Image (tube, rainbow, N blue to C red; front, top):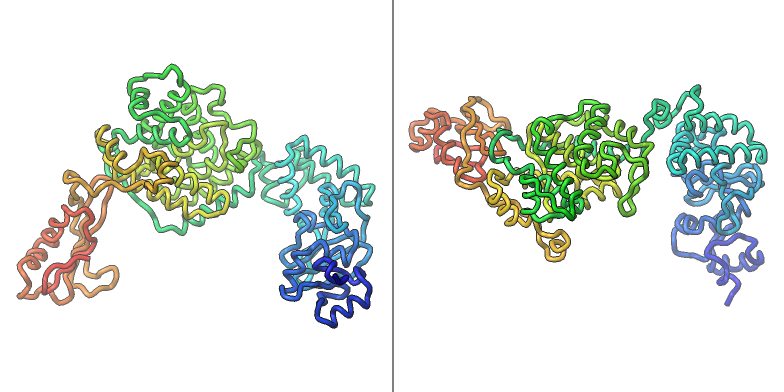
Length: 591
């Protein structure tokens, strides 16, 4: 085997005898990437080879270098413009395909620095903090060597969030001890007051970042969560308005809706009862002796969602949001005093690999998120946002999902618009949509999921308990989600409207002379029709030149004489009436 074949994919000029390397280049067995840097890879693009072998590349040109400054904050990764900042005795930059190595002089690796492959090092967190406290400017569009002041403050905020105040104080002591060893006393004079401001012991520091300003006001927040909230806000703001009005909130149609809302909301969280058992708990106060706490969870949820006055209370500012959250949580979990009802969590919580907002950042993150909520114009959008805000912050020790859904439906009830229930079979769809936004920043799945759930809820008549339960069964609402996924069972919409749910004329006619889309008409009449849970407008229009025609069919003449009424009436028995009726010389047509 040749000497070249035993070398790594990327190697320096001193890895083998100069003549051996030059001969291999001449034979086409090796190609030159830059001065003093070669590769055995003859096919991949040079920038891909360099990025794949980053540490070997750096070590070949700058042996024992310390990856420092901004690059240490990035975890030894290059910046977006391809810059990697180093400490090394050799000062010249190395410009490579897709990568620029930018060294400066400074202390060699300290004992606390992190060893990397190929004999390299990365600045420890205390050292990197000190290094980034030095002012620098990017030139000619290049990334600056050190962090900007706001970026440094944001890093400090993330560190206190990760390590708690005690860990952050220990980190501060480490920077104080390290600064004289590295001759970074000047940088310490910038960094130390900032760390004091983050700890709340220095009140004379003018913050450069929104994060530190929020902390100084007593409301630090989680910036990653706020980015998610902005993503959801933008998606909802782009969305065409979704409106499903409730025409009569006192209608018997909604009589047992709160029961099933409470039943399914608890089922999602693992509080599982048979429907009849839950019915006895709620309406007969029959508490199973072996499960009193679970029973009180169902009762607490029902107490909230069945109270019309409570469900029309919605927050107008962040203080009201926090007060309302706590008061509803107290009712929800009054049967579990060990869960501290109405008190924000004191310890971090998580589900699977999702770590929720840390206790110190709960209130501030709710406040920052509510700023987006206030800007949304439509109840459905505000409901979706409110639910995700509370679910993502997870402000309590327990009951977060339930209280999030109560807050969601309160936004709808106050409008008044149709509520949203998440049936048992739809549980995984709902949770996967939440995860898609949390993990991947995809808001579309959550909006679609809740849109369908609202359509589904609006389609069910809850006047009679047994009939409502039968409809829920027919549409697979009670199917176990794991079994449903395995067998392909899905939540389905109920059958079209029953005969006693015919459309009725609600208002009209409103006369107009020009069609909204610019169609050629002589005259038109707009009629509003409605049925429980739905309202729409039907336009009856006379095609251009037909208004005074003498040879029109009898039904067309009648439609004109009644200003569209006779054309509307036959549509009232249809499950999905058209929204446009056209009177022509050949007859009446719908679109």
